Image 1: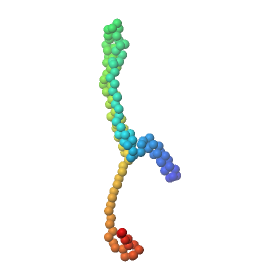
Image 2: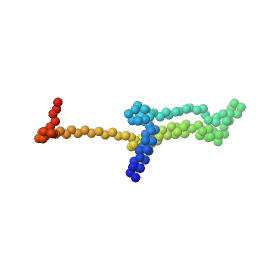
Image 3: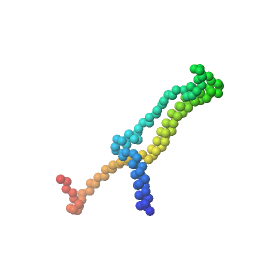
Length: 123
């Protein structure tokens, strides 16, 4: 049972890491720290040509409100504000980032061996 759980975990983690380059390689950093390309396109006014009759723009109040809502820049800015939650989602996965810990301790033994078989001759 324990072996089956270990093998399943190994297979799942191998599949997850197969999508990403291994840690010490430069491609790993390119994939993890890549910048998102925010693409902003300025468009022509939407549906404006629908209301041109004989070279003149004819609008009723209802048509004017429809055009204003269709060409509202606040709505377009709302689409751009989706980048912030996207970055928050990526940072939430930070708990599974690898962590490297290292420690060093120095212990010294100054006992003189009394048994000749334990003596070490430096040379």
